Amino acid sequence: MEQPQIHLYHGDGKGKTTAAIGLAVRCAGAGGQVIFAQFMKGRDSSELNILKEVPQIHLIRVGKECGFSWQMSEDVKKELTQIHTQMLQEIRNLVKQKSIDLIVLDEVVSAYRLGFLPQQEVLDLLNEKPAEIVLTGRDPADELIAQADYLTEMRMGAHPYTKGLAARKGIEW
Image 1: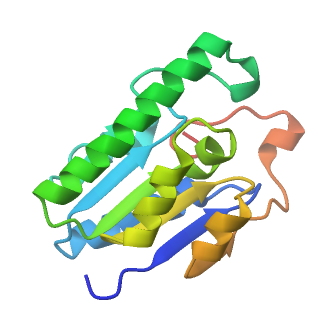
Image 2: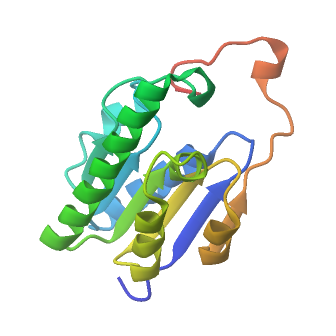
C-alpha cells in the first residue's frame, strides 16, 4: 500500500470497533490482506463469525475472557500482558511472512493506557508503518493521538444502556 496512514477511532461512543471492521472488510473486498487483532477482548461476538470466514482476514485474539480491567487480579493482569506481548509478536511475524495491507489493533488504546502490553513495541510498529494501521479504544495517550493521520472521535449522545437495556446480539455484540 502506498504511504500507509494511521487511523485512531476513540471516544466513549459506540462504533469504534464497528468502523474498524468496516475498513477491514473494505480492504479485504479490494483483495487486501488484513490482520485484525483484538486486545482486551476474549468473549465471542457476532462479527467474528463473519471475519473468520474471510480468507484475507487474519484474526488474532486474546483467546480467553479476562473481564474488566478494574476486576482483574494481579495474576490475570500479568497473564493478559503476556498474551498481548505474544499477539504483537504474531502480528510482526505475519507482516514478515505476507504482504499485509491493513493492521487493525482493536482496543489497543486501552491496553496501551493500562500498561497491558509493551508500549514501546506499539510505538515502534506505528513508526515503521508496515501497513495501514487502525487503533481503537477509549482515552488515547497523547503520543498515540500525535501519530494519527485520521483521528475520529465517537461521542455518545444517547445509548440504550443508559436506560437499562442490555447489549443485544447482532447490534452491540
